[in-house]
Length: 101
Image (tube, rainbow, N blue to C red; front, side, top):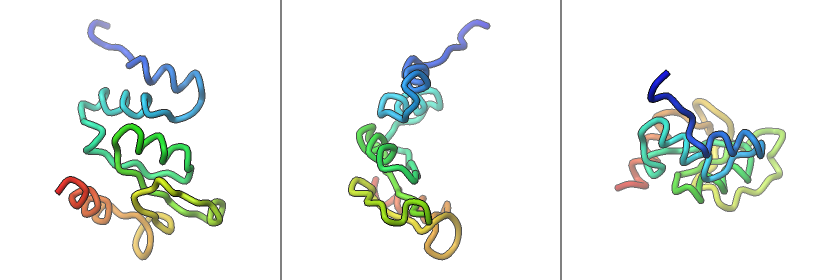
């Protein structure tokens, strides 16, 4: 299969079993987008920090499991997914537009 391959950052993350800024940048490269155009949602502070270090917007999704957690590097926090206090496409698009505008 000519021209196909896996970005080295994606292989590295699989080896260390955690999300790293390099892995996130590798995902962006594989999709042909710049990190600054992306938003990462996570329930993990380490993933949020990695996203911020990669130049992405990052949002914490607070759940019952991590409700006591602190997300100091998160750009925004959501109380789950969906309408109400949760993350929706419309909210994410609005936050990203405000970030780049």
